Length: 249
Image (cartoon, rainbow, N blue to C red; front, side, top):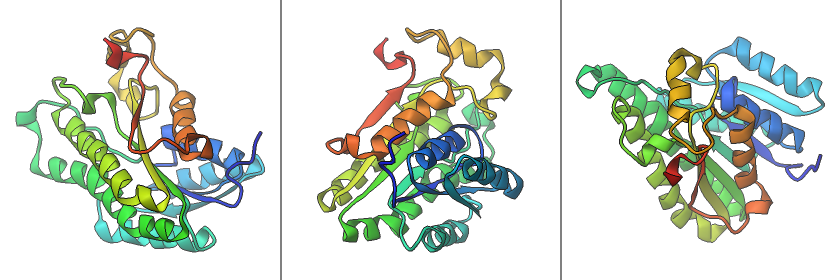
């Protein structure tokens, strides 16, 4: 496999499971030193060990992304363990509470925006300026198909990811002239540990797209890695749908 990320450090939030863990695997397989963040140190150690056993380089940094001090600390620790630089940032971590608007508790609203919007915002604030100084870097944000159309029960989750989609464009405009590319992927129904709780409804969502099946973490991760790579050098400020064609209908 090509080692096109050799010499680069990649920070992947929510990298202990699901899409994030697969992104970390794929980046490490292509030569990146991957810094995985998450809340669970046991799962973090397992993710790191898997990469190292395959010959890759990885470290784990525990972080609570609903706490701003922890977010800032994560950025600094990622730089420290990553050899003094972070070249790729994948804002993958997210929480996805579903339910009626009138039933959303104040604390859930605040914590969802903290993890899904504030954490990426401040990680970019901490890491992108140094990327710009070096003249290169790539940021990939993970959003969702329901950030672009309305769906009952998705108001809170969808609105946080819609905000992240606009931030993607804003950061591309802000940092693009300095060589930092900022893009997003927009997954549709994807089978992960987190979405298992959705049961049959995940498959029902997938039937609304032409492909008519649930996606895999490997398929979404491949899109993330492509956007982070030099192969996407001319792609700035866009969102790549990985949704089985749902946005086509």
